[in-house]
Image (cartoon, rainbow, N blue to C red; front, side):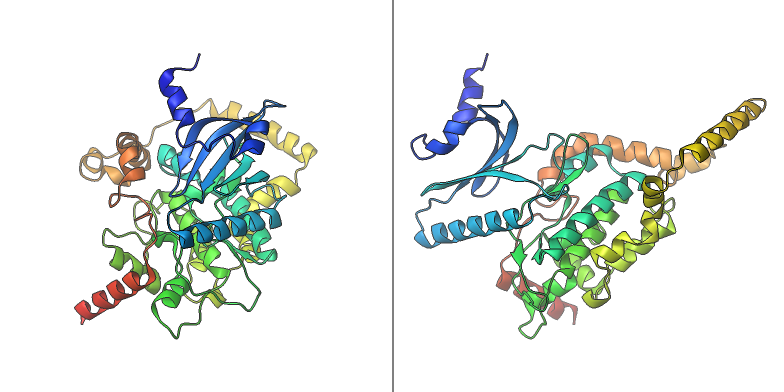
Length: 394
């Protein structure tokens, strides 16, 4: 039985049934899954089949007529791009679109495991094996987008959903654009911690060359770094210092977090976080990197007979090993007392407890946010702030 409060939650901000008659005829809206500045995402159920979807309801009505036109154009552009890139397994699928004078209803596949960001907040860091799987899927999605001449411009863990099988789905194409190979963009958009150096330069300097698809690969490098250690490479409490770090490509594989990460993983990140976009790996090149070799070998060179023989050898070896006593690794009490963070299992425990206690603070705080500030800054404000910061340094 649905309670009064739940009914109020369901009815809140829902378009009038006369306005969205076609949507209501086919779908039953349920609870809110998420909110944006001008949109609400709701669970909805297809009446004929009972299948669940996610409906993004965009309110394009506004007292400011210019803003209404802008929202309408942005919605049409996003729908056009979603249809252009439809059919890829790692990109969110758009199933239905309903348009009225004041609302758009976009019906997407439902990803019940939520955002990659929330998943990472729960587990703190990912193993290299899990990171390989996620990054391989992400590079395949980006490769497909770029083949379609689409640049996403806002890749980040919040815009990557996880389906029932924990496969990724790239979503939120609000900043995406279709560009030609030689076309360069100059407008500032995206999330500060994931912005590429050339994007920042294009937004700050009139004579800058602009930017292209390469900005998505920079964002992939930031995402991969974050998955492995739980925090982004360029974050700083002062946003201008963070932006300067990005423009200088200044980051570290700091100890002890990176002590257990392989050189192949670090090398791939280095080749993605390259200041010169022309020297940065493409998505196709990234998929050929040695970091992914073990994944490919596992999927494309499986030999049942050889694997069975190897299993027999392993069992025999285990039987022999049982004859010996295992001696646990001795941990120095002084290290545990003075430098507990150097020990991987203790480090994971500390971080896990911290994120479980403060996960709401990490997700929603304006300053205390793992991935810096999740906001878009006006072009002139960012430019003036950066110039002021440079003048202060002289």
